[in-house]
Image 1 (cartoon, rainbow, N blue to C red):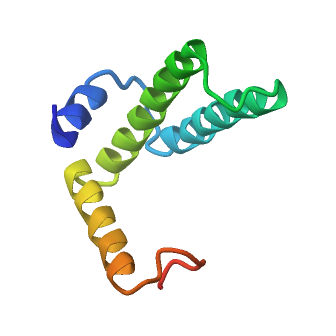
Image 2: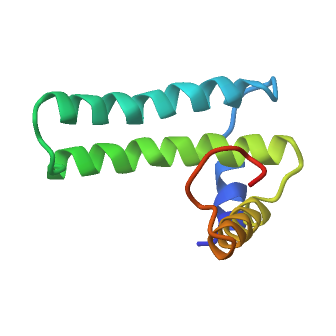
Length: 105
């Protein structure tokens, strides 16, 4: 499955009416990824457990669903999002600016 196929499948399961709804859902789901990781660290487990990995995979799927729907609702092709991101990162890598901060480096 490629990103556009996933995006089409994800959109087919959307039931919200306001196109800004998935922005709020994305915040919640990324928070869940962070929360599970925080508890992994808190409990002193540097190595992820099988249970943690299964949970994170599910949460990342939820994150991806929201990203796919946000992109769709704004008329953005998810394959293009992925392609543009890799091009940006490769450019930064070639220029030696992967580290650091700022969007336009």
